[in-house]
Length: 158
Image 1 (cartoon, rainbow, N blue to C red):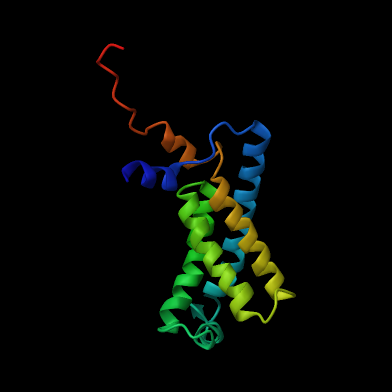
Image 2: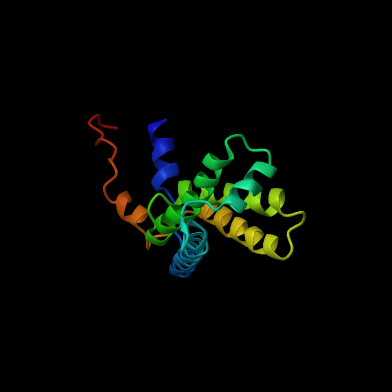
């Protein structure tokens, strides 16, 4: 169980080509920056910070209980999750939370994924890709792999 948890949090696809790792870094950083910028404009407004009433109303219309709480979770997963994606730290969990958030936006809030729903669908696809592929070698997650526990040396002769 410990090994599985470690692989989910810090693992990636071993043996990627340099071009794949560069592409993953580009996708991860671009997705993270865009999520931060878009959610920042909603989270930090001139009239105050936090989810605006219209956003909370949209969450309530989706049928979520405690819409204020879910609105906070959605905005924080995009903003803080975007920062984690940029750094490449806890990439898979951050990408998974954003995939769920943007998937709900694309298929729940918007009648069909066109217009504003198209950008939510694009974010959903980008974050699902990061959940599956991992962060690549140019990330803090990859650096953490250097410090993982090594298996004990074999003491019995063959």
